[in-house]
Length: 331
Image (cartoon, rainbow, N blue to C red; front, top):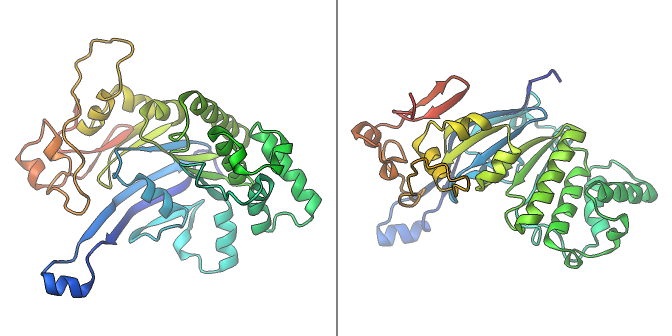
């Protein structure tokens, strides 16, 4: 793979859920069909060995995108290319299995993502056996010990059950399981949000060390901007299923171009007492079933005008980033 080439490319991704009442209820009660637009025309790419973060409030579509990419949910439209291969176009089950092995997911809740009835050694060994990477029991056992040591657990911990571990240790087990299939790409869906702050730092540092050691590529999903600033090379800001801004991390934090990005950053406590004027968070995210006309952010935006209320903004390229706004900040 050439340097700088995109390992993952997402183009025009959409996901719509039919949340209507049953047909007979709609006929009797006179209700229309209702559709929830969870993801709406999302496009981004992630170069090999880099971290792309998706941020936004709850309900913005972050986790839905994660589940679409790993194949847990089918997209309504759009394409996902992994290492140049269109995943939807792969019809051979064996070939699709080999491609799927190359990316794994780390879930948000380590208490729910591990089977409580399985020993940790069996949990970590499951991908090894499922993908047929090793068949000899002794070889599998040795590999499990290596993976546990890799995430800074004792190989003897494989004999324990998940309930015998703390939250941070369980997330280490989940990371070891994700690495068992020799993946290149990891989807990390808020992997530290259920953990204490001190444990969060340990897990994040472990993930950065593993990325450097194995050249891993991350899609990192979080609502914690401090975590994103520590982990990501590039950030995409989601609002009601749309990417409203994409920029390298340093530029996004120093010069946000979308009013929503500015609002998110203003919500972060100003520990350095910079004295910069800050705008408090206004309103709440609207329902994805009944989205506002025009720019979806216009009911909460202090800069909104008539054009914002009537016309949806197109994506505009601004130097090294892009923004979906009629009047970007600093333009």
